[in-house]
Length: 70
Image (tube, rainbow, N blue to C red):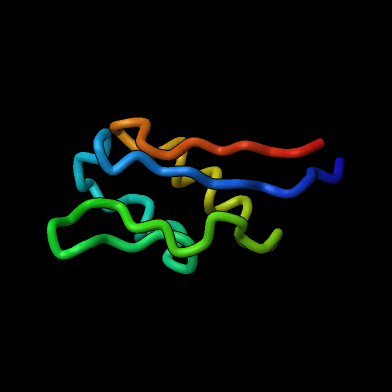
């Protein structure tokens, strides 16, 4: 099944700085000097979608939301 374009959103207010996102998908997420999530690519390439989904699933604060177009 082919999935559509993926849009990533993050909430720095919810972020607890665990850093799983940056470890799992470093091409899409980074951390600020304060340890909070930094979104590098709101529309990641298809090759990164699995890693981005894993990062969202592993985020202990639910600070990452994914929106997928059909």
